[in-house]
Amino acid sequence: MPGRLARVRPGPLPDRYQTGVQAAGLDYQTLRNYAWVARHFELWRRRETLSFGHHAEVASLPPAEADTWLDQAEQHGWSRNQLRLRLRESRRGNRAAIPARASQLRISAPSDRVQRWREAASRGDRDFEEWVLLTLDRATAHELGP
Picture 1 (tube, rainbow, N blue to C red):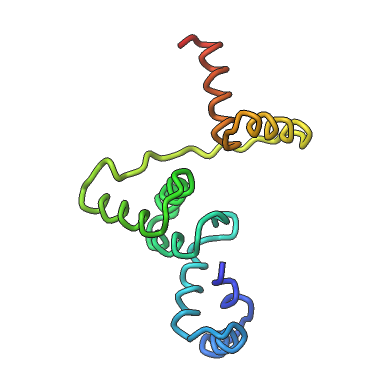
Picture 2 (cartoon, helix red, strand yellow; picture 1 turned 90 degrees about the vertical axis):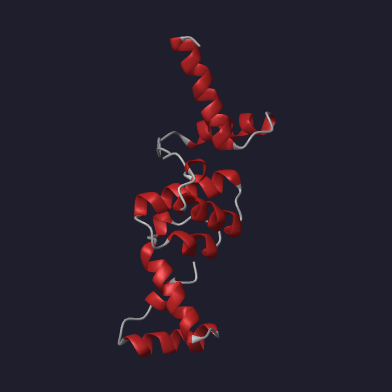
């Protein structure tokens, strides 16, 4: 994310940005905008598959809400403009535009198992995360019934 530039060098605010302006060839306000967005997203919360613009659209929201919107944009392949439109619709009270809160599940697994899972997803012509969810749903249906 471009905002890291503005956070690299400590010092008085104007001098820090001036160094960034010279190093990156950006204007002062652009660099300040990058820094503002970067301060709202720790590295672990940033989505590599989404643009800086996506992050900028939700930076003013509470972190959990911003993460929910970014998750949805990532899952549905929304452009920045599509995300902006859905945000606008949700502010107007359109409940259909408001994404359901997704839960984050993290597991640890040996890399050889993960590689086999990825291969299975690829053979099924599915996105890895989609394949994992489908497989878990099938296992749940088998254990609990439909």
